[in-house]
Length: 228
Image (cartoon, rainbow, N blue to C red; front, side, top):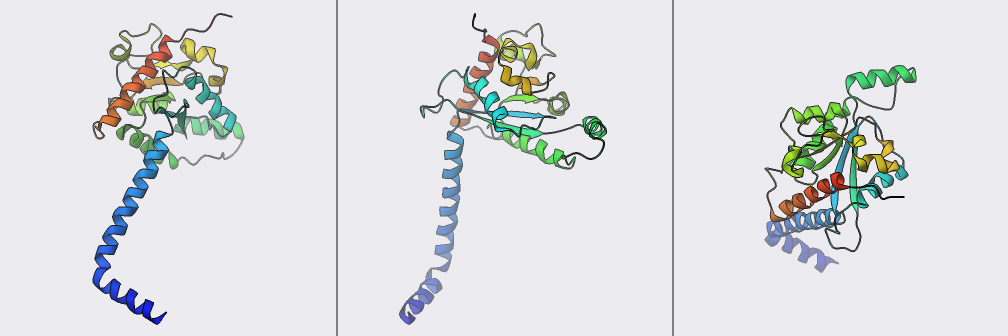
């Protein structure tokens, strides 16, 4: 044991900083590999932000299943079509006050988390991890004021007659939103829109993911309910 302690002390004296640097880069690489593995387990990622808290697993799975049904292909070629839904419970001040009044007291929502959730969505956008969004009008307007979205005509070749503006439609106004009952868990005024390409993350992988997300967005509007 004494020999080992002596060897360890000698080793640390001569190779302390080399060991620290190696361990640092090994940790960074391990984290990167883990994040890539987690990211690659999904074909795409979609953001929902609004007053509905999707706590129940079957609600999240139902929304995921609706989008998986029209997913153009198995993008990551892992043999499974899979979507990750990032859901953020965000209330405007007016919505919060209304829910408190309806509940006759406080509710399980901390308004101070709103800024953090908006920041999380911004990160998903800026890293190119998510492009398709389902948003409460309050949240949509926050990012709309930042010129965040792509005109529908640029993606679809035209602006649907039922569009809210040049950039968005209500999900419930699309045949896709009307056909899948699982989407009824989302408020009727939920806005469907598409984020501009990230100016920060410009890797080939990010661009390829963005192109695939555009294909899924087009598939949403091209969806035709099957004849019964």
